[in-house]
Image (cartoon, rainbow, N blue to C red; front, side, top):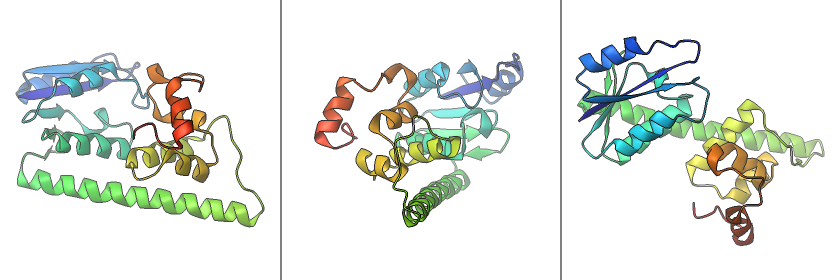
Length: 206
């Protein structure tokens, strides 16, 4: 089954263009979010990801309608591939159900690994430079957009423990949760999960 996903910003209240293209592509149903691309909360995207089953294909009008950023886009497409779900982007003519599309998917995977390596290198270089100046990192209440993206990428990489990520970025677990957990799962840092994770010294089952 082809299932479409459309997104329009709050300043662009007309999803008909995307929906018409999705219909022409043969989508039997589609979901639409009216929200900015930078937002982490997309209820319709969450629903379509739950709706998709093995053998289905997710269709979007353009790549930037799906991902907030390149790492986020790669993460989503990787998740779809792991679930044996295809992906099509009509404007870029990407179709992971074809041999050419599979090649593009492998390129996405290589880009994801490249991005993770760059993040690790930049983080370690920054830490070494700070230590050379006698600074060992504090516990800032908030992160810059760049460091927030680093935190999410390191967390989603699943090869780092929570302690390692916090130590590398100089933040507390509570600060980390604010940037990697959905809003409806966030608390003031005193949730039972945070306490259990602190006692284990791990990543809460990740």
